[in-house]
Image 1 (cartoon, rainbow, N blue to C red):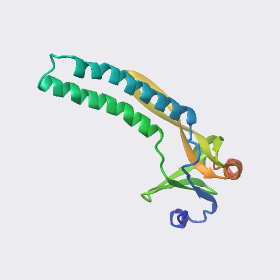
Image 2: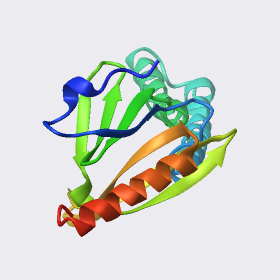
Image 3: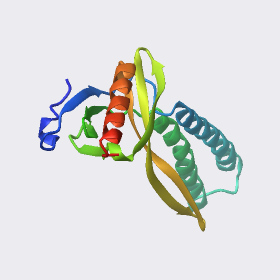
Image 4: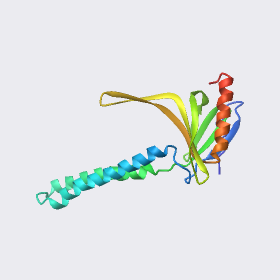
Length: 185
């Protein structure tokens, strides 16, 4: 059951479309999900191949050295297993397109709202079992610093596994055009 978005609307704002995510739908970015899963599998295999012989075949490991090796193995192998599990993680969300914004409500009933003025383009990123995902590319840039190097990428928003994604995409693109023509974008 889709929740009521009315309490979250601004004065004069109208709901144009609303829906929810479905587990059967494709992930927002299937390439990213697949690469995360593959990395997790490789990481788990490599760390297992490294730690298991050390723990079981080295006769010198006793007491605290053995416990430390086991703890490190659990941590490193756990990271790989966590990546595999996380890559298939599914969050149930509710979506709403108004004549001004894109709203997302999660299971904890926390609302996030995104103004159309930041959306530069949108695309249907996949269709599976009649459900599809829509990815919205924004002009918002996220910058991070790693090992003294700066990295930046554009932030994207999305709707995962929605029913009838073509209809939602049509409504979204028409709303973006209307907002652009009226000077709101």
